[in-house]
Length: 497
Image 1 (spheres, helix red, strand yellow):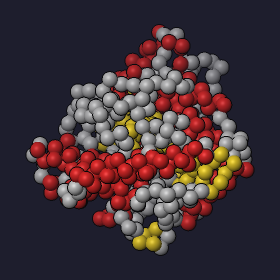
Image 2: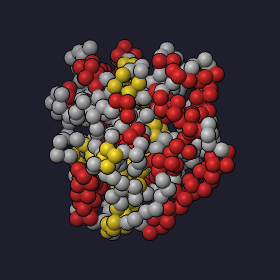
Image 3: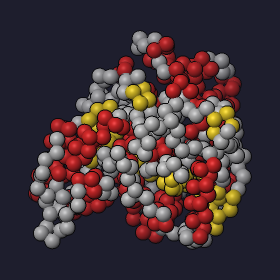
């Protein structure tokens, strides 16, 4: 698959030392090298495809790989480089990207992780992929997801189990687990994920990469089937550096005709804003568990050390706080149950038997059938308001909130429980939901939140630090993440296979 395509570089340019180095180079640097005729898009794409060919059997993080299509797109990109002034090339010209298989890609099958849609080929693009494509990015493949995104781990009857690159016997989390594994392993510098309560941030944390959930409505979510969705689920970038996440947000944010709740463009230059990143004097609230434990001791140790560095090296004024939030388990079930029931009804109408759907969906369907209209209205209007106000009150006093992304690092592949049986010796109340216990609430408040690698456990597993700010304060979140990255850089660390 890999060939020794000649590099398009000036005589004075220094070469990348290896294809592996090329595959782990940030997207910003790759795009600049391509615009400067120092790097061929063909060489880059072929290096990525060769690495995918080698590591896909170990990781199982792709549903579909597009070698012929990607090389053809790279050849066209290279011709454009040779005939176009650098400042006229699009932002991500020639840069490889993966798209989660819940997001439509016109002409490329989109399975939703389901055997029932194994050959479905959409006719339009999800907005996030359309905008990346318009910016010159090249699609190298679609990444794995649990069926319909309905699990906190990335396993499905269609694709099997996706493995964590830091320990193949462990989960990537979910539901954007394939995307996280691909980025962590150098199989693309950029990936798209989706997050309805943690599905970007959880796998990014467990795989040691950056995962951004922007303010709800910042990135359009419209697609063939969704114009005014439930206002919680978002799509967003998964990258190895904070700057790459900011770059993608610049490209994909802004209003869209198919998204009825998308925010107007705030005119922010997210990447440019990182030049002014500082935490000096910023008021930072720290919570070890959002009031809902337990948390694994190694996770607590790593996150606490990271927070201490925000104060000692970053100049932040950190204070541990208590925050009162509704029961996350009860809220999760009552909020998502009715929405998922509607999806189940639609699938059954199409001829798919309830018994053939994921067990998690069946359980939600059964529980939702016992939920009254009054209870659903209460969770929509009262409980969600309590969540929003809890964070609004906190952000009236603090600039940022930091806390662990997940209660535990990546756990062994979970089997029938769908999650860990216990955490720190405490039996898990709902194993399949445990790894989203610390990511769910902030999503329902609509606030921006990012996870960045905080460090590693003594067993060598990544731990994520979650950083959030008030609704609309995406720049503040990215700047804080950039400051921590400068204090404790991680992009040079690579899983070994």
